[in-house]
Image 1 (tube, rainbow, N blue to C red):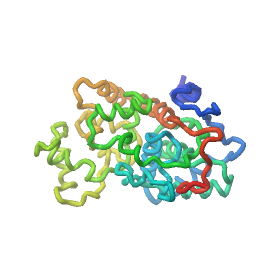
Image 2: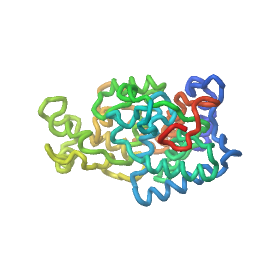
Image 3: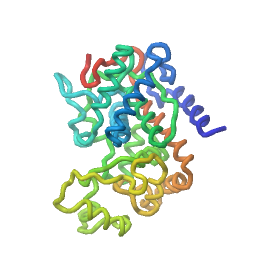
Length: 330
């Protein structure tokens, strides 16, 4: 059986598992053919918008993938992160872990085109899921059938952001627990961390590792010395913390398994990256080695983990709504 066939089998298993899906009272399940009759060109419309967006911004892939991740980890994949401040709405975007999220203008463009083609049909939560899959594939990564049929929340959950979103300076134990709380395991943690195969991070997210790791006055000992020197040239004490640095210094714009090879060479940019490999006795170490040695193994696991993550507690049936504007409730 081919890798993509394996992914399709897993997709069927996942979308029929009520624990993973968090099925609503109406017992609806998600499926890749959800819009087959109501908006048959949905995927091609999304693809056209993101292809144009990537021509203007090669970071659009990691941006939207991160928004999808941050949305799903707070009360499930319901598009709540997309809501702006309004009466009765405290936007999740204003919580510290989300203040650096970007790509909302692209979501707006996708939603506008979908509303023109099939008004009131495609949810903002589904836009994040399908756009993430298309952009990963466009940048050399795997493809998978995205289960669809989510509906949009009429609420935001700002108070739940800090407790649920992993941050770059947390240790492996805390990050692992946040994944467990979301119904995800260590393989999911390592596979989804592989999204750092492309994208950038600001100096502010890791500069402490370079000069004063854990208040020791010294750099993080898990950093390769030559990589440390390179990073210090880009990120200085008192310098511009907004400077962007490649998450993968080898193939920064390609979705591949070099991220894991970098961890083996002590070249993980964020503390949470390197701890996957440098934490003594952690079960994540063997998984990093597996993915570093086999890109197909990483791609299969990433696809499976994206399906699992994308199906955390969706709103279905008559729950929530289909927003006409992703930034505000109807």
